[in-house]
Image (cartoon, rainbow, N blue to C red; front, top):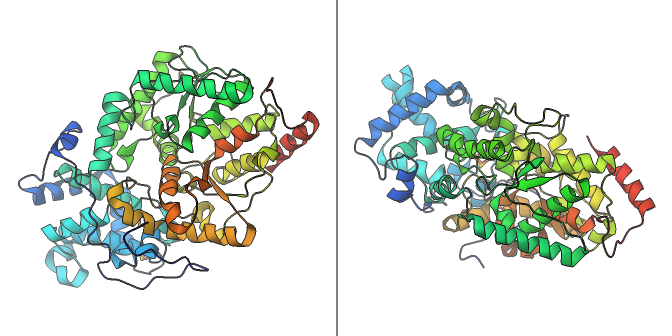
Length: 517
Ligand code: SF4
Ligand code: SF4
């Protein structure tokens, strides 16, 4: 159990009591010189850090027009104040989105506006002192860059972008975060966040093949580095070893098998995640994304399919084309890139999958929309596909599904509390408290509709929930991969104990096809 006060789960969301400085003590571990230098950043706080920070700030304002607009446009209407899960869970006023922005805005005004240069006291301008820099480090590492606040801001001010810019400035003066920077360096060196080497990966995939054969009697392959395959799957590396992620990977493998599509994983680019987005560094994002392009070219594949990873899908959907494109060597008849949910949904619509919903009858499910999928990307060819496609898959695989309250799902979804580079144990207090709004919504459907499990399509969400759910009275295995449900329900050709008959399956498949966007 947590050694700090847990926020209460109430009947509905209400603004917390303000506690000045409630989270001021929480400071994520700083990157060691080796982690910084591996990414080309200074190892420690540089001499003349103030001027260098302002210089970098100036450079970012020149590169990103939106950053300047976000810093200029706020009218202090207050609409965002109670929309951040970290504010709701901690009561710390600096976790209000507008207050978080103000940490950067006051420095912006001091150095980049006339009024701030001449009359700083009139416009709330302030210099970047050591104290302000400490606040930047603490509170820009208490933002999961989930963008919920921007949905409610009448000007669409995106605190996530401000937080990314602040982290980038800090990296450039030698004040980076250990968790993100260490992981990015591992991807550059080995190809995945975990530092999993090729023999270990091959061994894991072989083991999973044996498990599937034992369970179904069918030989389903999980190929590695197979040249000339049709599809290259880029999955989060958590899928290779941890529950419930690995059950999702088994689900993808069964879908590819049943669809009759050849596929492979690349040991060179065995990671969908791109933590460089969290530190706001396009150079680092570019370097990570280039591995995927190189692997696709080396293997001669025709399609890239991205696994269940929220921010990876944002990077792929929104940035891959500029970071690693053009992808003119891929098959233009398919989306570039394609989400594994789009792939599975297409197979369901075509009637290529036999699904026995009763295999999931021991669960009553709800669905957690992951922030980066919900608010920073799409799926399919219609607006809202990112909400409808996962739900259509879920309904095709399960009899019992209930959505959480409308103001906590789809584009209003609450962050799991561990996104944006905060999924580290040194921020556990923040993670537990920040999960409160999601846990409250889950409790509501658990109490009112008997919901037992929550499905997700994000590796960070799954890891975060596994860790924090017990604090709120839920079992750690109450969170499941969406493709784990597919894996349970799918009846493979030749499977030993097929549970559902073909007629019923055809009806379900057709219904699922109609349920889509
Ligand atoms: S982006 Fe998300 S975590 Fe950051 S301030 Fe807005 S609501 Fe809070
Ligand atoms: S909702 Fe937008 S304009 Fe209003 S206070 Fe928040 S950031 Fe400023």
